[in-house]
Amino acid sequence: MPEKEAAIAPQGELKSWTLDTARVLYDLPFNDLLFRAHTIHRENFDPNRVQLSKLLNIKTGGCPEDCGYCSQSSHHASNVKASKLIDTAEVIAEARKAKAQGATRYCMGAAWRSPKARDEAAIVSMIEEVKALGLETCMTLGMLSPEQARTFAEAGLDYYNHNLDTSERFYPQVVTTRTFGDRLETLAHVREAGIKVCSGGILGLGEQEDDRIDMLVTLANLPTPPESVPINMLIPIPGSRLAEAKPVDSIGFVRIIALARLMMPQSHVRLTAGRAAMSDEMQALCFFAGANSIFIGDTLLTTANPGDDRDNSLLRRLRLEPMTLEAHE
Image 1 (cartoon, rainbow, N blue to C red):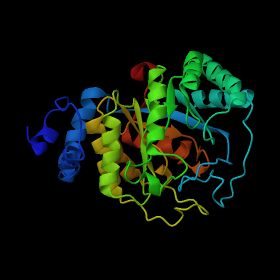
Image 2: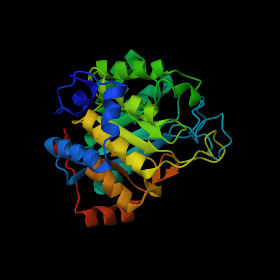
Image 3: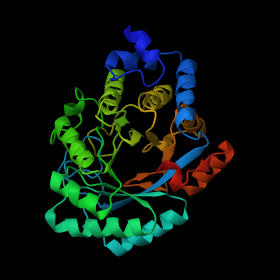
């Protein structure tokens, strides 16, 4: 089957994706791309329901990695101060609030290269106690060893977030303290431990369109694609290496959302960082193109999020309802 015909064939006929086959879809006329993505979305999900997650920063700043976009890197002159791991009781108190606000998944993030042995017991406790509230659990703690992944799986961890950020080609322009292969290795450890994978990337790092597409190709070609695919729009952080990055084109962003939906039809595609800078109309296009997950609350780690009032207003106007836990298990 020729490359162009293969890319436009009904979903499921492709055994693996290439940059060329994915690019054919990405370059479709905008209305055609959205029609195809929305059709696939309806075949796999209720298009009028959105999964709600809440993210808590459980250890802030002081990270030894040099990710060019991050406010928490010790390499950058941002105003974020390093902190110790917060108490489990504080985590549980915030998790209860998140559940009351409609969240079904609670995500906890620590600014580490990888967890230290001394912190593992506290992480296990957080997982177990959040899980006991009836919430799905997610952690993002940096790189994991196979043993750490198994420990957290045994505690009941549902998801592990570890973003690829961008393409393998462009990755060294964003991060130099670890490799693209390191990211894939942790994803493999997580999957082998029986934890669901949450992995996506960031648009606006200075990458080309092909880098964005190739990132999705890598994710879609994993032995099992991620169950959750967060797509971030860069929030330039003063003091970081990418503080002066150019804004992302809105239409290009929506195209990537649509492409993610077509390439990973059964994954939740999450609108993540950058929503505070998006118009309601841009977010509505993203939902139509296949996005069906957001973070609620007014903060994402150290950056702004739209907040409950704006989100509730938008979802109400679009007649979108929160997804129940049973609907995405």
